Amino acid sequence: MELEDQVALVTAGTAGIGAEVARLLVREGAQVIISGRNAERGAKVVADIGGGSGQVRFIAADLGDLDSVRNLADQAGEVDILVNNAAGFPTGLTVDQDVASFQTMFDTNVRATYFLTGLLAPAMLAKGRGSIVNVTTMGASMGVAGASGFSATKAALASFTRSCAAEFSPQGVRVNSVAPGPTHPDGVLGEWGERGEDLGKNLVLGRTERAAEIAEAILFLASPRASYVTGSTLAVDGATAI
Ligand SMILES: NC(=O)c1ccc[n+]([C@@H]2O[C@H](COP(=O)([O-])OP(=O)(O)OC[C@H]3O[C@@H](n4cnc5c(N)ncnc54)[C@H](OP(=O)(O)O)[C@@H]3O)[C@@H](O)[C@H]2O)c1
Image 1: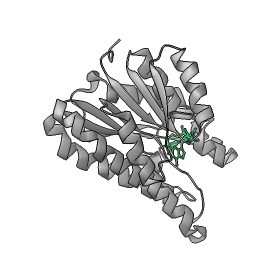
Image 2: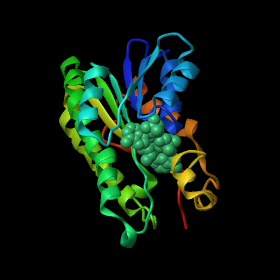
Image 3: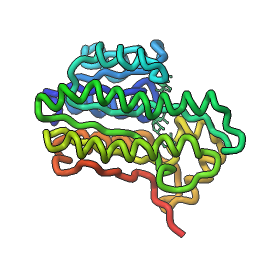
């Protein structure tokens, strides 16, 4: 077990990719905090992957709300690993996008990641070690019709990743991103249905991916095995080609 002395916070650990990341971090011996809005789902994941060991705990937080972000940081305390995974995904063509859901999406995906990182990084910097992994999307670096707002939030996080690496990594805190493709059966595919499956068929690997496949990449970046990796975005997306 490579993370026995580490504390990890995984936002949106109550479902999908976040729950799989939490499972792997527990397997590697970390103390894991998962956050989400839904306490029932949180309790289920804690029971499922923690098995009563006390190794996993849930903190309720709506990351669309800045006070909730601050409260999450307070309750989490010092962490060694931060996985910024929470995101909202209202789909829609640019010409149809309403302002309220655009704002909520930027608040949840960008503002929360920015300030949660700002609140938790100082303790990592003081210790001279830590790893932050931001979850973006393949859409951050390619055009996906109907996902312009979502992709823009994730492109902002790719930039934020590089800036944080420049600020934090000289003091031992690595910052990276993982960019998933269409992942079955969670999130985007839940919203997009058949269109998500079709996206998967057109990838080089010819299928959608499993949450566990992305979680393995996040675990790698969080772990000391990635000790010389910072400021990077790892595409875990089945690859596009023409
Ligand atoms: N699935 C895909 O195809 C795909 C593709 C590219 C990128 N991604 C990215 O991967 C990450 C995880 O996606 P997923 O598909 O695993 O998610 P998912 O299965 O749809 O689950 C969504 C998660 O986000 C949490 N969440 C949503 N809004 C929140 C808010 N305002 N505050 C706090 N938590 C919130 C939910 O928790 P509660 O309901 O408990 O609040 C839940 O844990 C996201 O950053 C997503 O953008 C996913």
